[in-house]
Length: 376
Ligand SMILES: Cc1ncc(COP(=O)(O)O)c(C=O)c1O
Image (cartoon, rainbow, N blue to C red; front, side, top):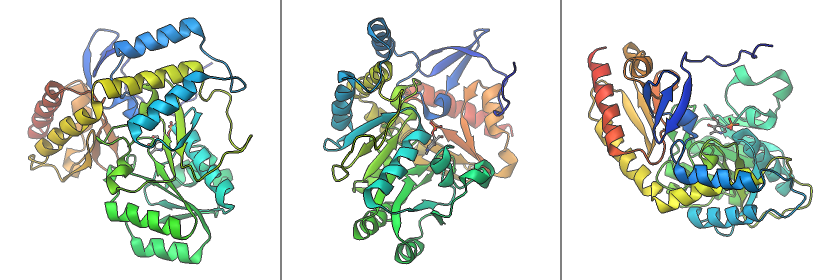
């Protein structure tokens, strides 16, 4: 049997990782500023994470949601504390798309309405509802097409008001910073406007925090910069530092009912142990502060490069917009300087490193980046 060939891959076989460094099978070292697509939050093989998973595996790895799993309660308490959303409720699942799928469905259960507002260039995942609110026709199969989704331009308050006036809106879904869309930061007044229109029309504000959440921007949720709460936050990626886990946290105004949501694997013992380890390290090592500090440093330094069109982002979610003639930058960084970064179309280099990235590693990147730009 061969693999179903859907991923354009780099010819690199990574077999080991420590912190922000990864190594291929020949022992070649790479600096990882991509974190496997914003997944590695506390660094590869963090000792506390490895120990917590190992200990849990010796106890029990999995049992279903038909029994008490105290680790879930511990995770909910810790998450409430670290995120500051203590009165929210936690539902656990397995991926970002599944988190958004549950968020959109729950919103519709809550207010009995169907229409969803999403935004140009949004990415929310590949399952049926999640892909329907994703602005990329190439990944929407005919079976996923629906007229329940209204795509609006980014940051257009007039269009938003009109859509609410003309339709019965169930929910609005928005990334605090668009990731796949090229690191576009949602303006604070726009998020505040969404909050007030959702209140006025009994619609649910869904904050997709799958990529921009979990401390990446220096605040636990990047939507928090707007100073207003969403009704549902979806999470995944950094939540398990590589162990597959996703979830939504839900405002106290939305009441649960048996059978409303569910999953076999969601919230299993091993996933909860991984996620607890992540939060413990975030707390003990002050990683929100580190993300803000090192991210701020990188953004300030990058703004000094005159060949860059624009630098966008917050904390350790950074987009470097490059002119077309520098389109080889990401490849040069990887193959000449052994540095992993991400990309977004048309020509944006994305930095999504672990939240404990050091100043020395940030400087190593800046030096390589400068050499790359000067030799192009
Ligand atoms: C903002 C956002 N939402 C949802 C998803 C989907 O997450 P997953 O790939 O875990 O389903 C992604 C993945 O890149 C994402 O960036």
